Length: 449
Image 1 (cartoon, helix red, strand yellow):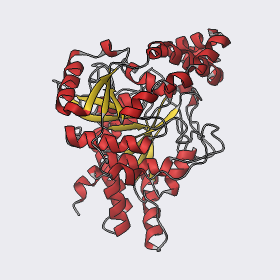
Image 2 (tube, rainbow, N blue to C red):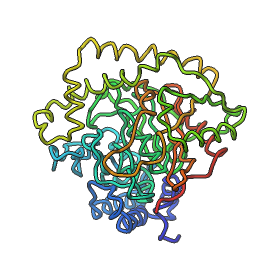
Image 3 (cartoon, rainbow, N blue to C red):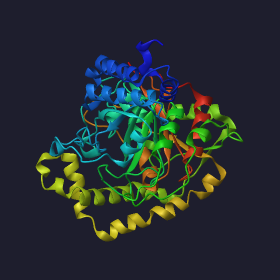
């Protein structure tokens, strides 16, 4: 097999080729490292990268298979890890000088799961400062003058540029869906509590959710299946039966899905191109999309989300606050507001999650998923901001699963994302609906230069 384009294979094809003996993990890792050498000087997606160590992992995976041992579903497949997720063999610096050189004693739960599935940890991808708003060094692979989004900037950019087929990120507001939209890849934020968060920088127990990036829905399903599970160290996870993401996502829906188009309270933030694109989407889908009003209570969600996020951030980043002169102005402002919030306002904001979520029951009883923009438009020009997360806030606050579909394009050639949202804990069905919509609307995302 020609090794010059192995980095563009899907994770599923990589895993199949390694299992069949058609390719070695070392070949795949070498192809990804070659791509990094080729393009990363203009993108800067990686915070920690040790090529020799990545190859050592790959050769160990090849030796394990050659010895006739059982292998996992991701055996030999390289994966990027957001640099707020602990790795015992690589530093985890959380995008801040305050944690420079920090090397954890053990892997995060999700990293241990990936290793158990046979994955090779290629390296650590760039995050914004403590996974908040101050940008890191990463640039958009479609046009380096534009933001890649945040806070999972490096993960989205690395997948879009063909440096790695899969990467992990996290979302407390819009940190998976927005960079996936700006970089033109699939980004999946599962239901809150589905993937354990032990060993990951904690901003907000109520809002933090692990997410994944890939170039196909099949790969999203493949890696998600390996990450869902119970971890007693994450009190929001629970024992559950294995979710067959791959089987369900690959199925044809028993009936053509019906989508609900929702003009959320932030609809006016969408730019003209995005509004036009969604008008065309509605026309293309015909009777498979209906416009529905959301519960009135969603109007207050932006403020409720901010109250929860900033209060919990202030508590979780108290040690960093002691060195606030070394934090960005935006993060200092968030933490200052969080420290000044009243306990009563915080408790009220927490208490509103369940009743607002319950208000979506009628929509999901009628429709398979809700469709909205992933962001106000394509990636903004400039690197001082990671863009507006407002189109993600509602779904993060409610803990509902959402996925970015890179199916549209702006006039300047940058991706525009479609966000599909499902009922909480109905994640596999959401992926099935997403695959149906992607096949109906457009081909798989184009490669970034």
